[in-house]
Image 1 (cartoon, one colour):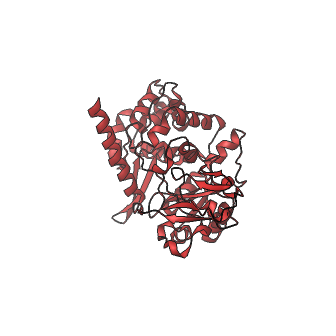
Image 2 (image 1 turned 45 degrees about the horizontal axis):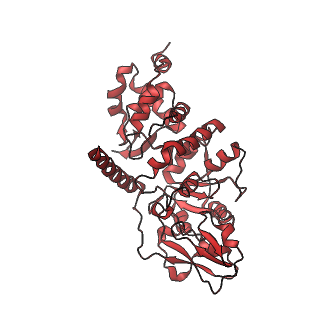
Length: 379
């Protein structure tokens, strides 16, 4: 038996609880629940040996050399560690950042969030049981944790046909511009729709399943992990056009230079479903627009009612009305109105997203540290 085989066959009944506590220290934590469903998720994503390695990683990217100092006590050499980390990355349990240093490529390794992160990376390995466990975890503990900082990893941008010249829309809110600027684009199957299909509850909004995108290095990683395929910008735009026709909400990374774009519906997307369960969804969604109804033009046809993914529209006395605490400014209702009675209006205060995803995570880290400090001082 090799050292690596021996390492992976070591059974430690507490290893997954230790990993849960370790991941709970991330800016978006991994809280324990009374049922222990979170451990089932970890057992799906990590083998016991991989869990032991993950406990010795940090959220800040680190070199192989740095990590090896912590794990050499387990009797594996540096080469074996590198192979294990690469396998973990391919399975979607950790994240690798590939950088160039002194003319050579270097890998940095780190722990990653459950969402957006490890969960989405399981799209190629998804099972009915895993998805059921994930939904249970959302209900029992993760929703509150995920939304605690009120800094969303996604933002909403308007569908193209809802945009008028007077909006003076910023480049980072123009989907076509985001696609044109990408060096590489990969398309993937929507993990939420795949999960709902496994539960026997297929999407009511669209029959399309392959309409989630990753850009640049994230696109290369998606292909490497086996759940994405590289496509042309023209083909990406065709998929996007179909998604918008079907009434899906366009949600890129909450940064000016996004590394992914999701096309979401209110019946499948776990983020939107859980947003609708809180009192004021608008506090958690970053969008620069709101829908507004011209009561004089509205005929109460209910097209917008069927189109809205956030249940933000009601019909009273045959006139549509928008609940501004639920509206996320996607523009779907605008393009479905035959009387042009609905339009997008720009919010008084414009939200400018962080420049990069790294900047976004720095904001989440800062806010998370503040919240935990406040909680500690109260206790």
